Length: 317
Image 1 (cartoon, rainbow, N blue to C red):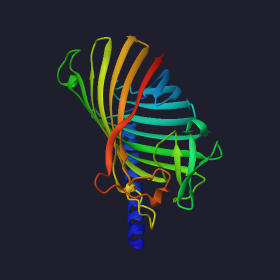
Image 2: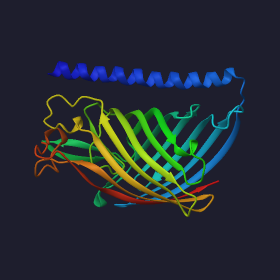
Image 3: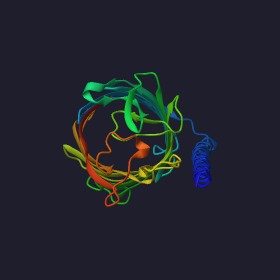
């Protein structure tokens, strides 16, 4: 059984590497094709500052800079670079991203981020903390900037806008799916170590994840600028720890959100978003049990519960 799990884990690692190499090569190919047509992009700069408040309570203050390198052949083809910093109640994170827009129906993206955090134990707020094993019981260990979380996310954004077929301000109906591979790691840490990031309710481990989102977005020339319904799914690509009785890492994770966007001015966007997420159901009295010793509820393994509601305001200039 252990050999089989190791074989599966190695197979997943090879698959992740092959997919990532394919995505990178595809993006480079598109970029080289543009260069072969003797295009020289012009740069556009856009700064965005955003404040987001969540309930249950969390606050995010972010600043982003977007650099758009336009193609002189077509205004619909460009490369976008982004730099972002996020300060939350219990964490600090920075990211760098690239997006290649050369096809009418698909964009390639890749993003690298790094962050760390601190904890307010009395308020049960854990920006970055570990889950220790104390004789079979879970013990939360605050890291307080002694460790950092790194992530690499790459994939394709496939989309279709009805406005490309029908002209008019009322036909901006977009169908979108984003498919990608994400790798997250706590450093320093072992593959068998569990940790919490940004007040998450479930333990994480170093490894790759398959991530996919499916959304419908409708934009209108009104004060209510856009409506969006999104479903996010994630599947862990690493094998469970040998000897564990907890099979939660084999399950899919889901998140459902509905967003309302308001546009009181050209440079201001307000967003309201309630969201629901899947929760793993265990047998009774498992809250303080260490992760690998928890037993799933065989009658009902998952439930969709309220996650949070957020309000955000963004200024773009």
